[in-house]
Image (cartoon, one colour):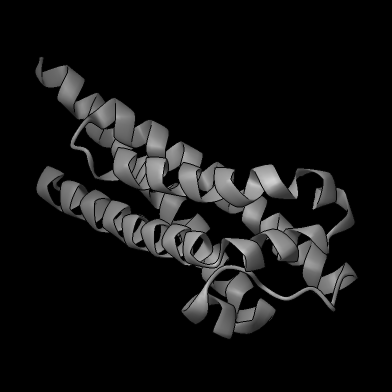
Length: 148
């Protein structure tokens, strides 16, 4: 694949994550009490709900910014961290789907309206995007270093 196409795909993946994370973060922050209450309903998160209610959206915003700054190493770290965070969110969704059917989603308007099944599909889609972004960014970083 040509370098320009790789860069364009990386940009598109990073901006898709940017939109997702900024939307999700501000949705949570605007309804912080609801988000915290949702986490308190999950036994393993109850003790940490107050901290996580603020930490999760802050991490999402930091990652969103890391992804759109035009720095190869920072972007790689942002993609890897986004993959890791999305893996945690996906694990949480699987646990809720199969073991905690009464828990509602506290993610925010549009994402919450999807329901858990479609939310899982969305997360898997973004996991695939992160993997593709990591592969492309690694190739891009290697070709950039060869040119130096």
